[in-house]
Length: 249
Image 1 (tube, rainbow, N blue to C red):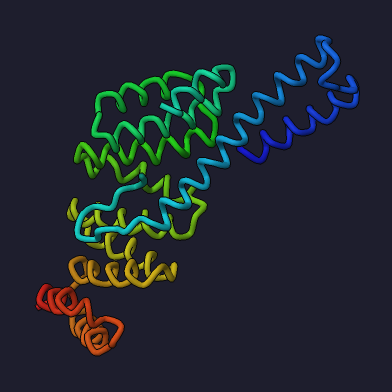
Image 2: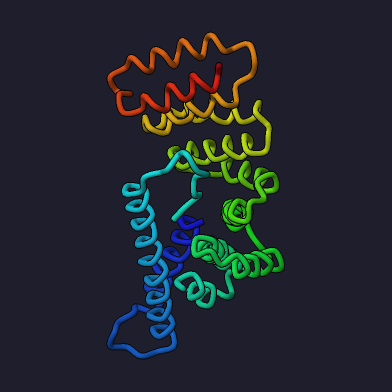
C-alpha cells in the first residue's frame, strides 16, 4: 500500500510542479495547492519511515519469553485517522494499529470500540490484513484462544517478515496446544523449525513439540533430545531438555 501511494503522489507532484513552475516566491492557487500537498505528503512519508525504524529497533531489542503466549507486537494513530479521513485504506490501517496499542495498554473496551468502527466502515486489503492481526491479538488478550486462531491463521499467511511469520507460527502452535489440538500444534511448530529462525526460537519450538507429539514417535524424539543435551550450544538449556524428556515419559 505504501509504495503504491508513494508512486501515485510522487507522479502527481512531478506533473504539478511542471505545469505550475512552482516557486516559493509565487502565490497562486496552483503553488498553494502544491506546497500544501508536499507538506502533507512529507508528514505521511516521514511518519511512515519513523514507524518502520521504530518497529525494526523494537524487534532487535525485544527478547521473547517462550514459557508464556508470545505477544504479537510492541495517540499517533488517532492523528493519522483524522488527517486521512478521506482515505479509508489508510484510516483502517491506522485504526488497526490503534486497537493494537489499546490491547498492549490493557484497555480491551477501547480496542473493541475501534474494531467496531473498522468493521462498520469500508476496508481495503491492507486494512483487512492489519485488522486480522490486531483482532487476533485482542482475542488472545481476553483469553478467547479458539476464536483467535482463524484470525491468526490469516495474519500468518499475509505476514511479509520471515522472522515475524515464524514467531506467529509459534504462537499458533501455542494456541492449538492450549485448546487441545495437538496435531495442529505440532504442524505449526514444525513450520517454525523449517523456517530456520534464530536458534532460541527453533529450540523452544522443538521443546514444545514434545508436549504436542503424536503417540508412536516417542523413541525418536527422546534420541533427538539426548543429542541436543550433549550439544555444547545447549548447556544453558539442560533443564528444559530434560523437562521435555520427562514429558515424553
